[in-house]
Amino acid sequence: MAKIVREFVFRVGTIVREKYPKKKRAARTAKIIKEGVRRQMKLDDTIKIVLHPELNALIWSRGAEKPPRTIKVRAEYDEEEGLVKILPSRK
Image 1 (cartoon, one colour):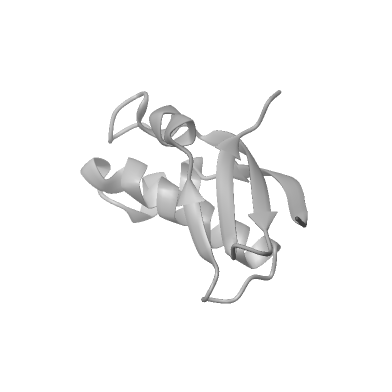
Image 2 (cartoon, rainbow, N blue to C red; image 1 turned 45 degrees about the vertical axis):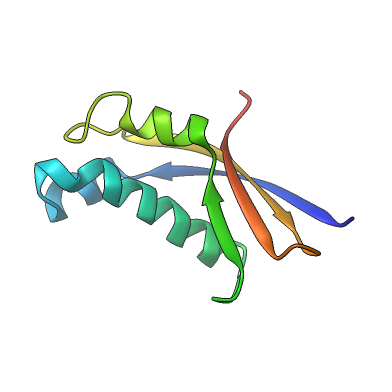
C-alpha cells in the first residue's frame, strides 16, 4: 500500500476576491485547492480528488462570501486506488 503524503499552503484570498462574485467564493476556493493539488503533485485527469468533510466545513465556516484567505492542507495519494484525499493540516 503506497501512500504519498504532502502538505501545502494555499493563499487564495486575493484570487477569489478579485475574480469571482461574492456568493461563489467558497465553492471556487474548493475548486482552486483541488486544481492546485493536482498541479503540484503532477497528477493526470484519471486520478480522483476528494475533499474531506472537515476541510469543506473549514472553507464554508465563514459563509459563501468570506472563505479563509490561507488554508493549510495535507494531501494523501493512494496509488493503488487512484485516489487523493485532501484533509486539513494537523498543525
